[in-house]
Length: 67
Image (tube, rainbow, N blue to C red; front, side, top):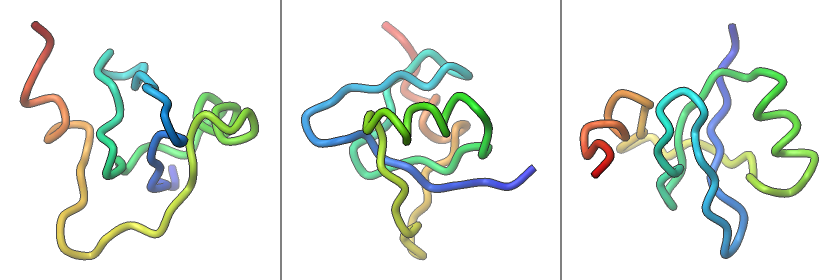
């Protein structure tokens, strides 16, 4: 499946349903599915060009874990 790079909308905290953790402000590479398309349509997240230097992935965003 295709992937898209998204970040939370201004002033919003958006949870990733796969991990339960909030999206990092710098963005995250996620599967392009219906959940994220709905969030895009609602304005909760923004699709952005992924930075070439350091792309956050669900695995790296999850390393901090829940507390």
